Image 1 (tube, rainbow, N blue to C red):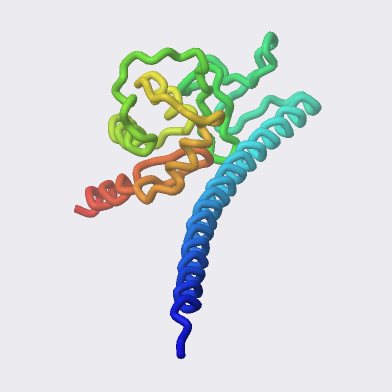
Image 2: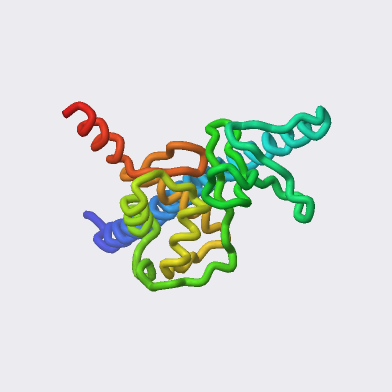
Length: 199
């Protein structure tokens, strides 16, 4: 004769085990997502560190040899701050931009004192707001530019590293593509330009 109490007890134990297993699986998925996010942040920081090291090496070589640097744009050192700056006659987004060594583009600086001029991005996500900005400008934007424009539009960043948050968000979204270190564009822009060129 079957002991119904024993069966009920075992079934209850099985249900509790399954519930615990499902909770752990959910936590594991969250942890894996966090690990992926951290890997992207580490990769973004490594890219930034590599660019900085190359810039430092180039500055040291130029100062030792007495030669001027020319990476596609002329760069000088501000005597007061020691920060690399483009020559006044070069075309750039900002005068105090640092040169992209590999791609001859400039990295715009972050304006930490920028005040919101509107609240247009206050209720938007990073990807929603960046999609609007990239459509409006019609060209790729560096994460520093995006940060400045988002801040001006009233976007509130929660983390301590807003530019990394932007880079991670855009890297994980299929609507964006990375065109240079720290620089993103809309994924569909190339396709539209290709169609326009063919037709």
